[in-house]
Image (tube, rainbow, N blue to C red; front, side):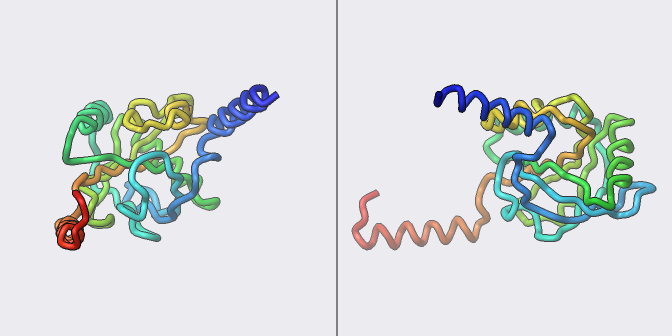
Length: 197
């Protein structure tokens, strides 16, 4: 009964995903800072989609809130980005540390009550990051509009089991100039050695 086993596995995976993030790999730890009336607090990050975190998040870094943006224009903006040739997005689900549940909940409430996403200070990220946002996800509502660009359908099916915060990075698609030059150099060295193409 190979097929039956697969169905059972799919059902189990769906259940695990419904309990939000248990199947998403833990990829980052850091702090959330400068939320009004909330002490800085620790979070863990679980990979949802996009570029590997080492490309854009600093290890043990900080997510520093510096402003807010209305949720609706933000989602429209993200969906426009999917047609852009200059930027890509990445998403990490933030999970509170054991002692920071209350600050985490306050931050979610602070943003969702006014239908805003948090705008984060880009200087705390790597140079590849153009913009970064802290997005409140409310209980029972999936991530669909935010992870439209992710091909993984398991992510598309994620329905949040509780109020959660999602970190969304907007990254420059092109490699840095230095990386591009190095690649060019390698390519010309290969062609000098008689490599084809």
